Image (cartoon, rainbow, N blue to C red; front, side, top):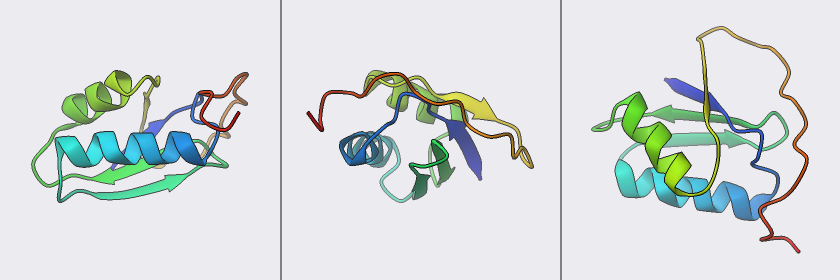
Length: 85
């Protein structure tokens, strides 16, 4: 499982955009997103962590790798992507 903290993911539109970007990179990956904690968990099939991070970046977000077992609370994001306005 690869986990990213994406603090600039702030709404359902963000979740959808990130999911689509990850699926375009690895169509068979299992993706779990927790908007409240800004966590994106990916169980990849064909992509590595760098490719998944790049997909999130290309979608307009800032992924920060999270080490396994880290439960630090996510920092609050300042602005939304504009999709919910």
